[in-house]
Length: 512
Image 1 (cartoon, rainbow, N blue to C red):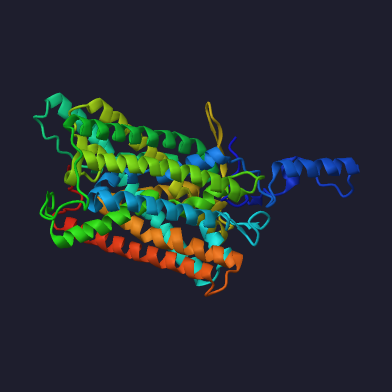
Image 2 (tube, one colour; image 1 turned 90 degrees about the vertical axis):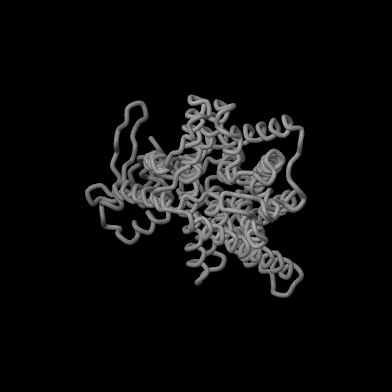
């Protein structure tokens, strides 16, 4: 039987509330006015400490490795596919330098954020179960609502971006086989709508997993898949460069006058594309919005922030290495013609089977990454609804559904309906705006400064009681303001890209 979801309230069966936090319920010991012996009382207390954490919730079981797999699943997502394009806009000097700079900033601010999981003291303080609860505990006031709005809007956007990316990879599989059969004579044009719908149906099924704790296995599978297609993209980039015995690209990136699908690149477009590349890199690294939720799965001792710090170091090092290799080798292979999706740049005819494996790995990875990002949003809506309609069986009651070869699965009707509607809405929006690079850049721009930099810095300063105008406070403000400028520039560039794409776009009729 699956463990009880921490995001849902006590179950209600026919109007009778089960008190899930009552230790007597778990150990099936009847409440007695007089304890039989002092030994029995001590035994119950010992059992309690073995089964529950200091917040009276079931013992967390996450480790350094599970936390690392969650982070790698969240970070090495579809964003890696656009890095060759991003380096292509910035050039050999600025491209790698900015990737390393983003990695250092996110590594630093993530460590600050991990120390804010508990308020007051990072070891014994009160836990925060979500990013928003951490902001409430440290900052409070209007900032909580602003944070929640930005965070959940960003998670909603990520779901749309992942739907687009998955459909592109699913089409790539179909097109590569089409090219192989026709020996390149058939252009193999097709619409992405059917593939987005198929991905949406898959996500509707996986979205019924009740809690973040229970998607750990999906995260590990997704992390393995991310390594698979990253290695293939890297290997193909090296092979392409070796075959032509030439390293393409320039120190300053794409040249003015280069012909693209939207026409020749002007000086203004060169600027916008460079700004959009910043957003693409920011999106590729962004995972702070689910860091607290990941940390809430880690067991203690040692202190959760210590385990999280180690997991962050490993994950950022691994992802930065992959990003540098994939981004740089992709640019070396294609130069100014570096595609928005690295794997589509190698053609579809040869080696079609290797590209099929890579694209299958992308789709499997995105199935898991979609859940890692959306579970915090699911939990927020369900917790709020349970508080708002606490007497409604539709919202709060759970029913046992026996499944052969699995066991008992807990069904909640509100969870089924709301999560299904959520997936349908994100799928429809993805069908309306299938602009992968522009959506990725805009999401990275909107989420980078507030969620990755501003709030972690503000919470850390509040926890450590850092006073204004001290050297440390000034340093934090300089870092925050610099990242704000980067976010604004990336947002402007991405919006300019969307406007340019809309000139030749027809809703629901986009084909590749």
